[in-house]
Image 1 (spheres, rainbow, N blue to C red):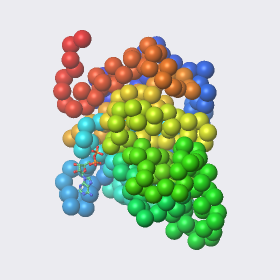
Image 2 (tube, helix red, strand yellow):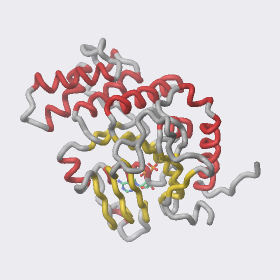
Image 3 (spheres, rainbow, N blue to C red):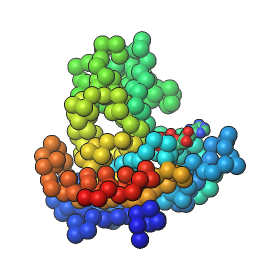
Image 4 (cartoon, protein in one colour):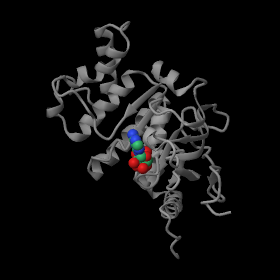
Length: 294
Ligand code: ADP
């Protein structure tokens, strides 16, 4: 069975472990699913009678795991993320976030979102920006408490010295750190990140990957990341789901056989390269191109 005809079954690297026993914080087989997606299809209102943007999507994302979605532009990665966030209703199928619907999960602030653009309010300091969403979404929380939580999270993302700075005084990477702190201040169980580092230079991007690993080590959040970077997907993820187009669907899912904690040394692990090559191959296929001769 080739990758394109294979349903969204987990594809494990031959001869490689699903998770290394040396994993620092493994998402073990017994961890419960935090996100379950069953046979969903999504059509946008304007194209209701047209083909679904994504279809036949099945996913089970374990509590405390990091999962990446990768695939060509337009294959529906953001749409799937928005559905998990409760922003786009599926036209078919079922979704379950920690035992409730995505809309309920959003209302209970179980889900935090980080986008490519930091979207900070330019007239507010980093501290006030990080506190802002919590303050507007929960009137029971005092401004003082929201700011205390925001300050903690700004420290966690390495902005402890920049609380009083305005967005214009922050670099692109620092602004994105502030937007991550803003999402964390809601204390979500799940962090959804849509190309969060797409606008950053390569070195800053790599630093942000280590930041995500650090946040994950400290908080154990479930993280779903949309990325175009194969390196980023391999470095960060327990599992990578490769999506294809026409229709938008998952063409294969790869379990990354690298131990945690991961860091710059992980790039030197031969299994990193092995996974990277496999992913590249599947991505080429997902673009509808034949596999290249090796
Ligand atoms: P990706 O994130 O993989 O680039 P998207 O989820 O953004 O893909 O988009 C998938 C498809 O859905 C694209 O063809 C896009 O044009 C379409 N689409 C996205 N958002 C909307 C919308 N709000 N209304 C109609 N079509 C949309």
